[in-house]
Length: 234
Length: 255
Image 1 (tube, each protein chain N blue to C red):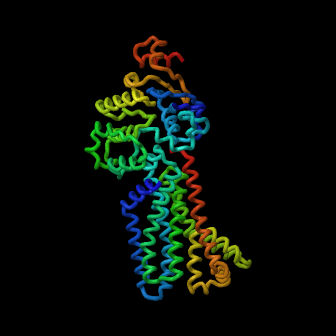
Image 2: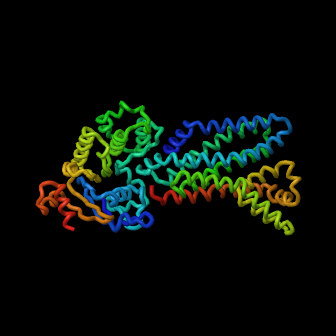
Image 3: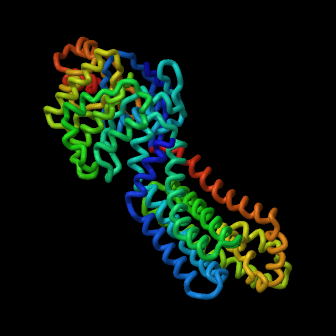
């Protein structure tokens, strides 16, 4: 569904992505892991067209998406740190995005309901806690029934109950044949929701395998240990 | 695009700076027209004040607005909207609301107290100057991510066009006074939108008779319909060049 070919990106002298080539199929939950600053967020921002790569190509269903924008109607994005216009209310932000995406056929308000966001509709974005902003981001990402979901550390600021709600939602959407990319550092969580793990290191793809394969060839029961073992082998 | 523009307008109207700006201009214009003397005199004083304040307020307001809308733009770029459209909406939102305030604050009094061709030129010039300085402000804002630096660049641009440039021109005229400089002055005028605007309005007032030989040359060139159209064409160019270059930078950079 998404194919990335020889993607390179540098910020000044710092090379963040060094020749990344990878592909992801529909109906999978792929967890992107790697140390801080290994290029995970940059890669997702490249897919979204927020960061423009120096070279290489990104294709969604066979078509290059560079310098295009219409394809973004198929992507739901939940940023690591959601930044919103401070003086807009929750209701206004949600209404605005809905207004912009008027052509979307399905509007999925499940997360708005589950997170009780209606009760806070009149609060200004600037006065919200980090976790509440995350909930708004999550609700917006899932709202238009996108084929691809890119979630950047989705549960990092959420309380356990809200995190659980989000995980259930992720699994539900996976069953409906969506591709879900999650960057995360929490191994237990990855084990719960993901099928594949893609590990990035210093702008390279270190490995990209299914969780079952990783466990099998390292002879480990727990994913955390298995990944630590692969890292130590180097 | 109209949807994005709607929210930009909504945001600007809610912070009441633009309204205050309109009221300020309105009081200024009504005051000047009622100070006595002919409407021409009032238009002349108004011209000088407009050419000083309109660029300053446009450039400072547009720069701060651009930086404050960063989150808004970040939110929109992940949506299926062309970046160029986001940029155009931001530009039109700011430029049109400031022009609206100018039309209300200066256009209406001019229409009431001194409706004439000169008055029309004054209003047109003010609107053009607004569009030009908003475009320059956006250029300053896309060049750097640092808000303080961006506002610094914007203020430098204002200093240059509103104050320093005239000093340079005077210096050149004074130093090379022995040479025929009529055409050189004409070119130098075209290189500063504020001066261009001033000349367009001045030439329609009687004071242009006091401007000597260069004034006569200006009058012979800009006095005709063709010359005036060319002057406004140049102003349009002054809008398009900074706008298009800032849009180009904006659509090719990382957010």
